Image 1 (cartoon, helix red, strand yellow):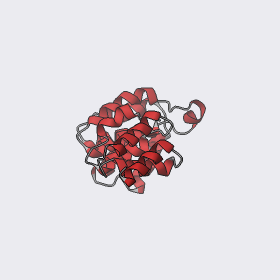
Image 2 (cartoon, rainbow, N blue to C red):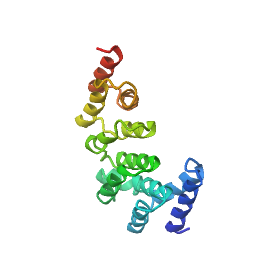
Image 3 (tube, one colour):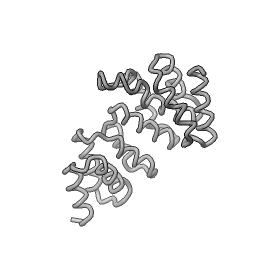
Image 4 (cartoon, rainbow, N blue to C red):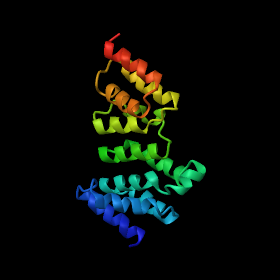
Length: 188
């Protein structure tokens, strides 16, 4: 099967509501392992398609295109620079699933910054808030501060607690977030 056919099958499954199926993820993994310009171009075209399913699939393919050999040698996926502006533009998409896919993709490229995501920190969607928490880089002081600031804001439960707990599952020794969470829990 050609890359375009694999992508079309993934889009079909996503449109049918089967984006969690093994078949869907098998197709996505096939595309991830073809780090070629034509696959990037197909996925990038999906990112601006009228269909939310196509846009989400496009972001999902861009998320890990070129994994793993390029990543191990350079610390970047081969299409990180080209993908970044596309994925950042998708953060303002009207479809929640597309935004979640774009956030995860930025995280996979290790380019999700607090500056990109701060405007979504209080989004009503729990999925978007959790995607932010998983995408943020614990080594980035601005990411730590974003979560700590939300905890200190007193906005109990919208982003702060979920994000802090998710962040700490990945980075259990992050004292900035630990201290802010302790303060939040005690109300002091």
